[in-house]
Image (tube, rainbow, N blue to C red; front, top):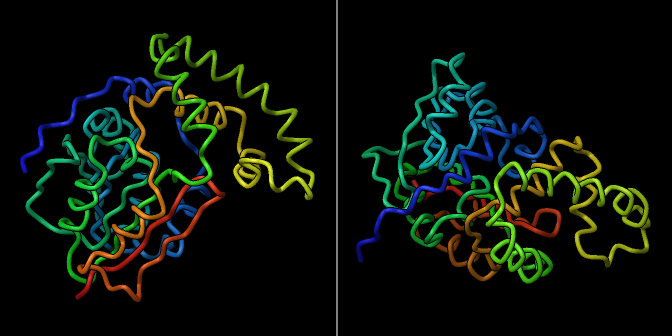
Length: 264
């Protein structure tokens, strides 16, 4: 069945013009059990490059990185002029056909924002060579009830109507309000049952600006499809993947890291 091209969303370009992501440890957490060594001297396809923050990390070790984005490829290209081994492609992940395959295919924090995550996952598999590595990090349906049923309705009803500058202001206020709670209540060990307990441990490791970006990202995203564990298992049960290599790993209670190798 033919799929129409996904719409461009100015919100993503606005976001990555306003913010930068300097928290490299998150990328390394999200790709586990893969490591940066998994990218060494490899041909890498990055599906959804945003402002190029993860592109830069991979380009430091990979032979070549092809970074794809529907909304921000030009912006990321302008930030990566110091790397000769990176190519930026303006393309829609739901219909992308690059005509070649890669050693590693990476999609970090993007698949859940596409029109059709199922189709995008198939596109990722199609662009990975036999024996190659697939790495996906996605928001989980499990553990995200507050965002799904609280933040998302507010975003659709209210926040999408704000200018990006006003939304950034709201994000700074919300972030500042979280600090006292996150640094007191969410440090008490016997309160681990609280929602986002693991997530807020990361919050304490990040700078204020990076936490503002996290909040802004939740309020700015034009759409989000939270990935259920059942969906993650269905994706990773593909007969094209070596099932002995497959890892489905919850991350801080709000996301899944999906890693596996294609059969040779």
